[in-house]
Image (tube, rainbow, N blue to C red; front, side, top):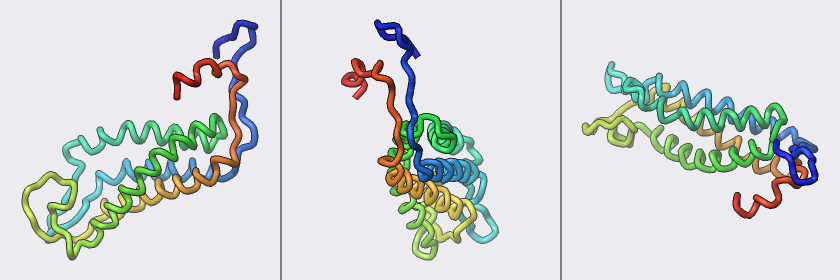
Length: 174
C-alpha cells in the first residue's frame, strides 16, 4: 500500500476468520462453476429437440463478470485473504441469486409453463420438459443463495481492518 505522512506503510490486518467465511466462499465458487456450465446444457426438451440457450455465446459473455467477481470473492474467503471484502461481495451477489433461484424454480413446473417463459428469445409458445441446464441453474442459484446465507452468518464472526491509513478516504468511498 501507500505510506502516510508519518512514513508508516498501510496494511490490511486480518484477525479471526470464521470457518463459515470459508464455507461461504466454497459455496460461491461451486455456484459460479455450475452457473458457467449451465448454458452448455439444454434448458428443456420439446419432443426430440433440445432447447439450448448457449449456442449464441452471449450467455457465457454475460456470465464472465459474475464469474470473475464472485469467483474472486469466494477465493478470498476460502484462502482467508481479505475475508470481509469477499463476504461483502457474496452478500450482494447472493441476495440477487435468491431472486434468480425463485425464477428458476418457477420454470421447473414445466407442465404449466411454456417456452415463452424460458430465457431463449423465441416467439413460439409450446410446452416443454425440463432439461439438465434448467436443473443446473437451480443448483447453481441455490449454491449462490446458500453462500449468501452463510456469508451473513460469517460477517460478524470475521475480523478485518486496516491500520487507519484509509480513514481520511472512507467518507468519499461510502
